[in-house]
Picture 1: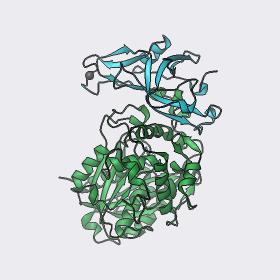
Picture 2: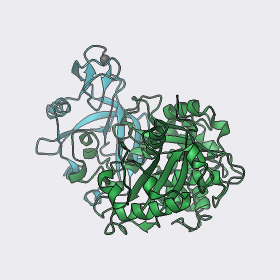
Picture 3: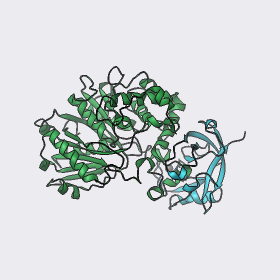
Picture 4: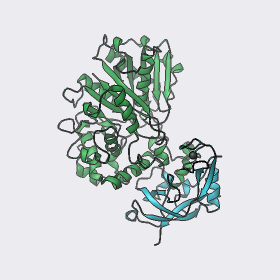
Amino acid sequence: MSLLSELASLHPDSLSSPFWDACKKRELRLQRCADCGAFRHPPLAGCPSCASTRDEWALVGGRGRVYSHTTIYHPALPTVADEVPYNVVVVEFDDAPGARIISNVLDAEPEEIHVGLELELHWDDCGDGVVLPRFKIAQK
Amino acid sequence: MSLKDQTCIAGVGLTDYGRRGDFFEIGSVPKIAEALDRALEDSGIDRREIDGFCSYSVDPNDPSRLAPALGIPNINYSSLVFGGGGGGTCGAVANAAAAITAGLAEVVMVYKTITQPPHARFGASYGSAQLAANPLTDFHRPFGLISPVQFFSMIFRRHMHLYGTTSRHLAEVAVATRTHARRNPKALMQAPLTLEDHQESRLIADPFRLFDCCQENDGGGVILVTSAERARDLAQPPVYIMAGAQGGSAEWGQALTSQNASDEIYATAGHAHLAKRLYAMAGVGPEDVDVALLYDHFSGLVILQLEDYGFCERGEGGAFVEDGGLLWEGGRLPVNTHGGNLSEVYLLGLTHIVEAVRQLRGTSTSQVEGAEIALATAGPANLPTSSLLLRR
Ligand SMILES: [Zn+2]
């Protein structure tokens, strides 16, 4: 059973489906302005830097870094009561400056996680077409 | 043209406080009526003079039903600040001030109640499937990031990483706030709290512990705003609205739930943009503020707001709160002298404005001697958020 399986459902719309469709193909793609090249996430209709509505979905490499993190001890919902403690991380990428994604680090103890920790992508197939980008601590 | 000093807060009224769910069966309109009665009595205003309605946080009490139920004959102005949570409190008061300054209304009531049903508490509002499963929450909900404390914990964690802020700094905020609550008979949290009690309390979302989180409860309040000219003839000493600011910079946007604010402002409360506008409108600076009522859903956000509003440099908020830095007597800056959301009551920011009014009338239970200017802020969160500068 995968982590937080009770929460593993998606509700894509026209803006977000390119992200989730790519995940199904085991590709991490982030939205980038087709005019000025600035990344943005979560998806937005227009570019915060230049207001262009032309975008592209750039393939991002699998190495990320912890920008910030928490370990959750109190279950906010009964459905995660058996999952605590679990970590949540904000991940940044060298090849997608200005965009971060929210995820989890698998197989990690709370004290192992710190800002700057190098991560590698791990695709988590949660069933029903839901494939989530999760991470493991990068092996040097 | 600005609204500086054109209007006053002439009356305030709060309901009695209940535990979460206590007022659900009673409903919000009777609680607004209770708060309004107290605000009218406080101010000496006749209810029939009220002709404007301002609220925030997706308030369901539309003036078209509220006004007749309260015996108010005219609706000449109404507005609702965008956003959920407590970000719009001060913005709703600023809307009232703007409407009066522009001649759209004479007396505006700003109102809000919390009468929570058991199944929809704020603390879990991003998690439950029926409330929050949508394209935007897809980017955090499947990863277990489902409640406000969790989002804020990551912002504060980054501040700790960048500046060496510690859990003990959080404890300082919690303890100073509780010290003030214990001087306020209305406060719900009256038990003594020490730094050690805080350090030994259970983790909720690291680094935030139990005593870093505000309570949830039921209650409500009404704030009456009118022209400065009218306020001078009323029952209470007028409290002037020097400045109001609402919104934020777009690069903050939905920074709380997206965690994508620019690197320069990620580890902040997102209020620096408002602070600049507020001080410019009022023509004063942080050194002129005698008492600050800073929205404290979580202790760490007080530290970040101290920096955003210029009471110390970026990264020095931790040192600022050390050794009782926020205490009403002997502190560097008296903060949340009513006991705040953490220890008095959680009414989506209304009590911070009410306490600012008390301080400027000289009637706080932890009165700052000679207080002339007060800052009140609304909840740091996704935009819009807001703040006010008031003076006596
Ligand atoms: Zn662009």
